[in-house]
Length: 107
Image 1 (cartoon, rainbow, N blue to C red):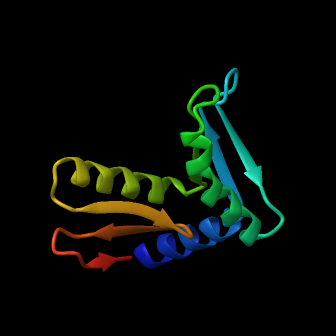
Image 2 (image 1 turned 60 degrees about the vertical axis):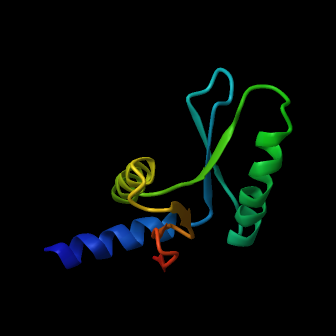
């Protein structure tokens, strides 16, 4: 059963690979943008820091469009980071990446 769920999660994440979610846009709960190609989505991800640091208007957050399962996993890893059990965590191409205290990166 677990393998089937993992396969479904993988398929769902693949269908979201060109999407980005924008949070913090006034008068909108969230906006999902679908890019024609994954490399264009990556340009949007790289530009998010400039958007955040520009100081123009409200803070807008740009995230990958993850499945519920991966969102829950990312949330748990952020909690581990807050409690200093891990050094860092982020998502990359739909995968949750963790950097341990001793510097080892796990995907």
